[in-house]
Length: 118
Ligand SMILES: [Zn+2]
Figure 1: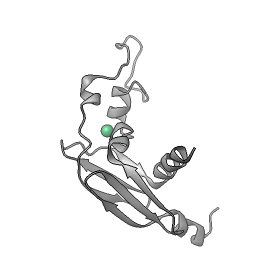
Figure 2 (figure 1 turned 30 degrees about the vertical axis):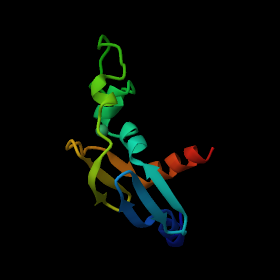
Figure 3 (figure 1 turned 180 degrees about the vertical axis):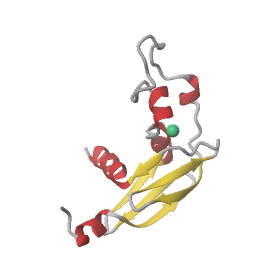
Figure 4 (figure 1 turned 135 degrees about the horizontal axis):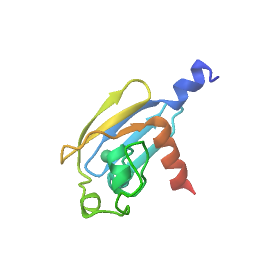
């Protein structure tokens, strides 16, 4: 179990959206800039996962067409319109094309920044 203090440090203190990046300042003072294009390409919703050929969920049955990056996924806008908090664990980004089903948990964002540090 994480202490209340630890949970606070792992949550964002501040989140800002610019034209090209989402900036998160964490409770522990750390700061990460997330490229919006990366966030869009990594959209965690099931629909985008399928477009990227990362099928999951029971709706995918054998015999479906081969997964590939469709032009739809490749052409997806990386312009964000805004974001809303989701509970205390993440945010939902709304993209310029109206796509808003991806919930970016803070856990996911922390992992993304860890990958970028490698
Ligand atoms: Zn998505």
